[in-house]
Length: 370
Ligand code: MN
Image (cartoon, rainbow, N blue to C red; front, top):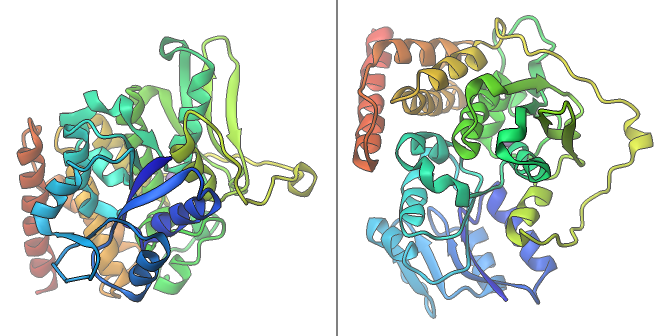
């Protein structure tokens, strides 16, 4: 029996993780569920999976359960004796738990790319133990098993292109349109990032840190069918690719069962239905965030952190209807040019870069609106 902690249990990754648990009650036992607050869905999950522990940000008494909360609770989580911690938290809120779990040498499967990026400079020596859930990185992780690290020529991440990759005019796009992803069912933040292609930019940085591969060897291609998730080219010219229907339960299941493979209830790929797979070069002029992200990644130091925070706030402002879709890249670019921090040396540096970026960002927005 493998014991699991599901962080972000009510979100997109969390609920799909629990789908996998439902399929394998003989192999998996949920020991902890963590969510930001008590909700109807969390209460249902507690009833169904009967965890020993529940984490919520602000303490609430839940009869019969050990309730952990606040920062103290996060520290306690990272000390629990659990076989696998699944991090399905969205955005920069996932940084602290990621840090504490890695510091305590816990087995971590994570979909939280923001944490991998922001902690990259200070924790990348621990990253070889992480099992990626992000579909492209799960694909690369699987393809890399076909050869040795020094036999890798390049890795290729695919992008669906989001809803707008063919559209010329990106002005006046509504929140609803941007949230209407053609292929993947995901949380709001990553869906907007997908529409701006920022998601692929962040994933290039994520891949750089996770797999310790230089940026020159990482590429992104638009692949609208979302059937090929990632490819690794080896020095002999052979390319190994990972294919499946776009369904997050496949990479989640693999992250849980690794190094084994278990059955899933997912719709199998029918090559005759697919017929053809297309690949296009991304247009960095129409989707400047891809270029901006790659540049920030290559500069390294604090830049990937500033990029991540600026994007998260810009996406939030877009979702709240306060800025236009086309202002997301403009704002992120401005913030990156405005800020200059020394490279972080430890976790505290990372947190202060995040806080200062948030503050300077607020001032910048206020000034521009006056
Ligand atoms: Mn992805």
